[in-house]
Length: 121
Image (cartoon, rainbow, N blue to C red; front, top):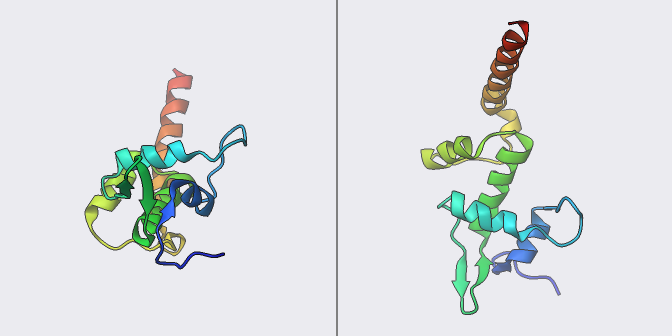
């Protein structure tokens, strides 16, 4: 039986939706979602009796954005916080918006350049 798109999802269901995998490949890494909740105040699941978390579609989309920016774009936690705190709507198709990718690439090039300078000394 499939749930309605507007139905609340458990943390395990959200981990499957986000396709999160643990390094050992055993259980679903729900700890990642709980960590992101602590870091990003915008993620606010309903917490009911028994301290069980339930996520609506808005929170799931926000988690997808966080995962995209951290994992696919290689951004830092602080970088993602700045984007989320900016208040502007953020679409998941950021690949078409090369500004995030360019900033990330620029930061990596600066780090590599500094490493090379240090090695030459």
